[in-house]
Amino acid sequence: MESTFARKTTSGRNPPTRIVDIQLSVLFSANQVVEFTVCSWILTILSYILVAFTLPLSACLCIKVVQEYERAVIFRLGRLMPGGARGPGKYFFYSAVYRLIQENRSSSCLILSKDSVTVAVDAVVYFRISNATISVTNVEDASRSTKLLAQTTLRNILGTRTLAEMLSDREAISHQMQCTLDEATDPWGVKVERVEVKDVRLPLQLQRAMAAEAEATREAGAKVIAAEGEQKASQALREAAEVTILFKIGPSIVNFCEGVECYISCIILAIRYNIVGYNKLTKATNIFAAIELKIIAYVDDV
Image (cartoon, rainbow, N blue to C red):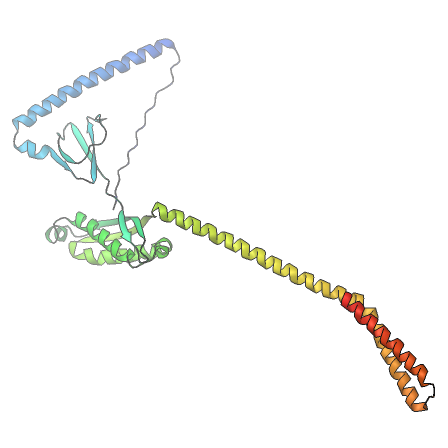
């Protein structure tokens, strides 16, 4: 779990209009810095003298412990102390002169999902003390215990879900965590108002693998669409070719049918009237057979 403190500082200066004004403002600013520096040292020395006279009680009140996962930002009379944020350890400061602000830099919660993927998850838990008496008597540190329980609950809930479910069902995960934490912290006098899964970070190698998989899926889809288009185009071309062939051989088929009808009529007449010129009928039959062969050869060529 992670908590941060944000601070904004603004400073402004009116643009100078004359050279004399610039020189006076610089001198005035320098005098202010010198005066403030002297006053700050005087107040600091007096505070240390006061601490020395009130030992050992003052020593117990002026020692602050910064944990390993925390960083301390120290201000002296409203000004930031040089050196930046302090690391873990013990620091001696007087609250009348110094102000220490601790920033929690605890790392994200590493969770192994159901499909054996390690992800870093950041979640935010909003809670309040509903019963001050129970929160003091039933638990040693209600705030810290709630944070630790939230981490454990987050691991237990996300450990039963796959990576895809973590990314898509954040609202359901948040609601389940809120109900579980609220029920568990009720004997401590703590009311969990809201739980939000802030971020789910994947390992770099897994991000690259997922990007490659997505790209391959898109390429495969494009190939499938192209293949379907070619299939439809070839089907349309085949239908057009069939129509063209029928259009070309249509007259030949009509002539063939007319020849068949004529041939049958000749046979019927020969049988009915017992025509003696059978040779003429045979010759007509041969001519018709030759026409039939030409038509078949033409159809094969087409």
